[in-house]
Amino acid sequence: MKKKVVIVGAGLVGSILACYLSRRGHKIAVYERRPDMRTAGFVGGRSINLALSHRGWKALKAIGLQDEVSKIAIPMRGRIIHDLTGTTSFIPYGKDDQAIYSVSRGHLNQIMVEAADKNADVDFHFDQRCAAIDFNKNSVTFQNEHTKAQHQEQADVIFGADGAFSEVRYEMQKTPNFNLWQNHEEYGYKELEIPAGNYGEHLIDKHALHIWPRKSFMMIALPNLDGSFTVTLFAPFKGENSFETVKTEAQVDAYFKRNFPDAVALMPDRKKDFFNNPTSSLCTIKCFPWKYKDACLIGDAAHAVVPFYGQGMNCGFEDVYELEGILNSTGENWEEALNKLQYQRKPNSDAIADLALYNFIEMRDLSGREDFQLRLKIEKRIAQKFADKFMTHYAMVTFSDLSYSEAKKRGEQQSLLLDKIMALPDIENNWESDMVMAIAEEWINNNRN
Image 1 (cartoon, rainbow, N blue to C red):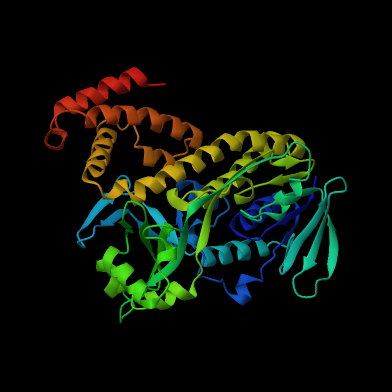
Image 2: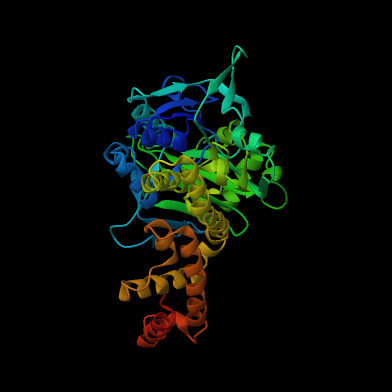
């Protein structure tokens, strides 16, 4: 039975949700507070490049968009770590054919909106802010951002796909027994740039995610199609090496020369970028329930995570992919389907939120340490030798269909094995020994589910 579905938010999750639901024959109205990015362009300066991986590709492939998105995606096969001396080391993410993909959020969003808009049953409405929701009447009030005129839209089903600071979630907070946990990190981020070379070439390896780990802060760079890199500085708001310590152009120069000396020559506009682009916050949001009457939160509106595992978008796409399967299994019983979605996805969104926070520590602090790099080499060697029984923790999260909650659980268990191996005498010289593999094999046999 065809439903009238109102989706609040035309970002990545809202637009892919429109693609999926329109294919099922429903009438979709998508409302977005921002202007149409296809005509107004996508505003940069406060958005981190996205890392598209297996879960996201799976959702795109199911609606025939894999090839189109592949045109704007650059494979990154591992991390390149830059130390203070400018020496680099490469740490592969997985097997030789495995990579995560750098994509422009703006370009991807345009592709998704265009794909949804091709369906006659999908209508987009831009410059429209969600002002109120009457959950009893399934009515959403929208306000035009320019004229301030308001109108109401009736729906059979309402989705809040309007991001971390969701207006739909705010309206749900007024309903009984709604629980919200929100945590702002003491760290912020600022977008900078490494421009392309004189001939449009990438000035550093484009098939890697570059990291300058400095223990309490870090800088990363992801490649773009035009030869540039989107650079993001993550630092504390206050204290040593924080944003508050950099107030003048001279202080910007001193900060970069002291902490990222090999990047200075690559970033001629660092001072302009630093002061022109905002310092944005990092926030984790967990809430429950996601569903109230005929309305449901999805994507960042339900579970905003910090970006350090590159899974925020992938998790949101997986929400939509799993909703499709649930609708199939319930015969489009929407009450049952939305209820099942929240209970099925909540443990996994909580797990990836926790994993993302840990991965910040790994990226900014541990990734530059020799003992941690050795630990990853050992973990990868075990995974290669016992490929049918053991995956690296990163591969579980990034290259598999294993639920995030199960990946978190198994990763914690495998950490105990790696702790044991790293504690062996002279492990830095014996890590490739038969003894290490024997310890691993015994542990795997004793801990197989």
